[in-house]
Length: 582
Image (spheres, rainbow, N blue to C red):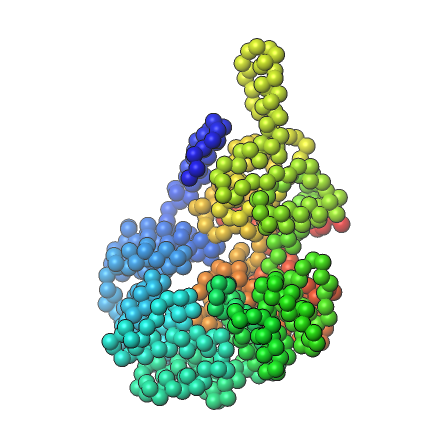
């Protein structure tokens, strides 16, 4: 960490350290309970949930201790803290009952896969199978194992069947690339599946190497058609530098697909845009696509919009440049930080806060967000009376904060008075008094530093707003951000739909992928919007989605209405937005 560069920041650091201890005190005094752990998990803070379960395990014994250790390990795994999960599993004793032994083995398998130990992961799931009593349980175990293999292969983990001496393990490893290809393009892998089944006639994965792999019924497996009705082409980067983003969006899209009633599912064909969005688009149209969903990047979307003779409607997963007008049959869906900044401006005005200052990072994101916020604020009759930029690579934001709050001017007046009077004065610097709010545009790591430094510089009483980028679930790390208000998607803040999707996620599309990712929610809502744009009157569609309440504007852009929250004790608490004063 960079050395602190001023006496004021040293004082700030000391004050914040004390404040941090005080803020953590009440939570630390609360007794660990299962209810607190479950609440932390529901609110998107698996690390806190794991710590509570681990504390409960320390004071328990026997089967209760084992249960808490396993719960803590699962929570650490959800928090991507694989070493901590493995540490707790090493402390657990082997359950005596078969059901407990199976759950333990499956958890060991998930931890092994998360640590990129593929063969150990397969062996753990095979150990779980030996403890399972019914065909349905064994089938579910196979589904989970197949999902882990696909996820590992897609994320660059080395999966080499030749490294396995056991033929059963080798057969599972051979399925990894087939499962990954099936997720990209289900219609292209039926031959590979048939060849695998012929080579592995007695392999236990026969039950998932057919219909389950493609999400098909046995009756239509031979045709390779993954649904009925309209033909949808999903264009995403599934290899190359944007593969992680593309596969997460795809997983969200397919989760919504599998939650749809089977009789109403469209025929979905997935195309990799790594070789270019335009060739993928042309191929999709030639294959009979009736709706194109994608591509993902703004450059690709712009290139597709420029293609001549587009007769197929498109739901692009990004926005065209602002200077490019909307096109007939060309719908645009994006997680736009500029749109969020405009919602923040409207919310500030609705709360009666018309004069404010803004802080934004010195980068393209900060420039765009600040411009959108300022424009919307002024359009509603508000005024941004000051703004300052900061370097997000720094950790000391005293200079831009004191500049925009005019604290430096207050200190300058003190120095002038001391010079005139020739004596040292007892002086308390003051911030400017002509503002109602602060807009602090920042990514989550920066916001966790910026908010407490604003409090130290006498701005803790001012309403402070940010976009959703400022928030990532972590009750402990977010303690010093209390009071920050921001809009976010229901997927991050919770709700009936979010909870139901999480509960059904493993059954709908078993994978080790991220559970709180905004891009996953984006893909989920893209599938729902695909149904809306195929409706007779798309502009009348209103969808309550994971990313917000969605509607289609006349120019084809999807508008998102977000949920408002304020951080209290490190946790987001819903707040009711007031009516727009306009």
